[in-house]
Image (cartoon, rainbow, N blue to C red; front, top):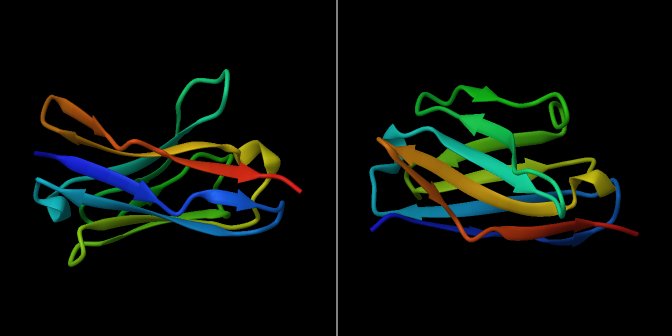
Length: 115
C-alpha cells in the first residue's frame, strides 16, 4: 500500500525558513520522480518542486532560488527546504508521485507565513 506522509509544517515569520519532509512507503522510492505541490485557500493546487529519480530538479519561477527539493533514498524520504518565506507561500503543502497510471498524494502539511 502506497503511503506518503508529510511533516514539518507550521507557523513562521516572513523571511524565515522551514524544512518539510515526506516519508514514503509501499513502493520503490528511489526509482520514481517526486513532487511537492501547494494549495492556498481559494486557489488551485500548484507544483512547487520536482525531483527525478536521477536527482534532476525543477522549480517554477515563484520559488526558484528560495526552495530546494531533495531526496534521501536510503530513508525513503523527500524533503523541501524553504527559505526567505513570504506570506504568499502560505498554503497546504502536499507530497506527490505517479506510479504508472495512479497518482498518489499525502495528507498535506500546513505552512503559514505571518508576523
